[in-house]
Length: 392
Ligand SMILES: Cc1ncc(COP(=O)(O)O)c(C=O)c1O
Image (tube, rainbow, N blue to C red; front, side):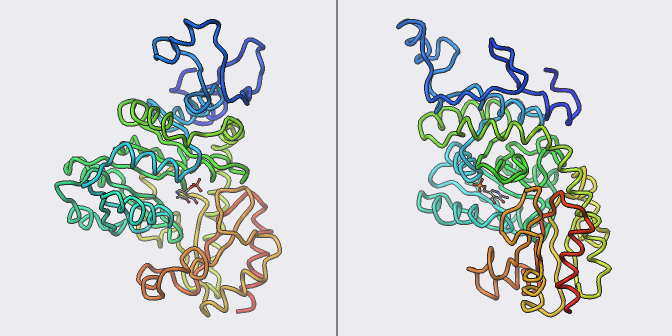
């Protein structure tokens, strides 16, 4: 398969290897181990002298197909799949950092990522400085002689702030650090961080890569030297590999990725415009709107603005909860990346454990609602939100 083809084609075709049966759809190799022809072959496979399957914690044909397809979509040399998105971030940290080293991380990344760096990795002597996703000077100032990794997520959740990947990759390079980008919200259908100078791309495949909320999975994407050569031995030994069943589901998810991301982004754009005009709404955060502070950057960096938006209703928490409680169609859940539209009140859920002052400083107001737009008809989504918004 020529990996220079269009994204839509790569999503459907890249990475597929057919077995001797000539199956049309990708085969699911639901097996924990593989048999050898004889003792010499077993010895050669274990020693690495002969290519071939040994054990699914090391390699599996269905997992390899998923890895090759995602690598093609990101325009990367290698992809290594992991059991979840958090396993992808943990594995990246484990292979690229050691005690005494330092990380500069956006303060607007997924909550578990913050816990991983500030809690778990700190216990192993790895220090992390958290900085604004949009203020480049804060990243520059945070650099220490021991800084080895920059980590960011763009657009951020729930305020959709956009980090300048190219500018931060230049700062990271000067600092002698790697830049890792969590590409969960855009996926390669909308943003290819490696082309903008990132060294490593992280995925929670659980979100848009699956797209239908079925399985957990993750991936690390990049060069053979920074990803394949170091992560494959790590996963083989440490164990958080992707299950073949989940890889098979994710392969099917990738086939519709381009289509879904375009459609969900287009619907989010329309919903954002409608909300911005709505008298009960004080503010809408969506990179596709001209009112967004990084609108121009998002236009340069992303193919479309994505499916996640947030908005502040007038009337604080009571009004925001009224909107949620008046929905009949939207799923009230913190998850996203699904064809089913979801809604959540960040201040009392995803950001509920941080102090009211820290929340206010981060812009997570009491009236803020986050919506991850799916594939239902726009008119039905608007009607579902209007019911609560009309209550004022
Ligand atoms: C941006 C981002 N990164 C990483 C993760 C973690 O992924 P997983 O739940 O697959 O471990 C999530 C999960 O919501 C996420 O939203």
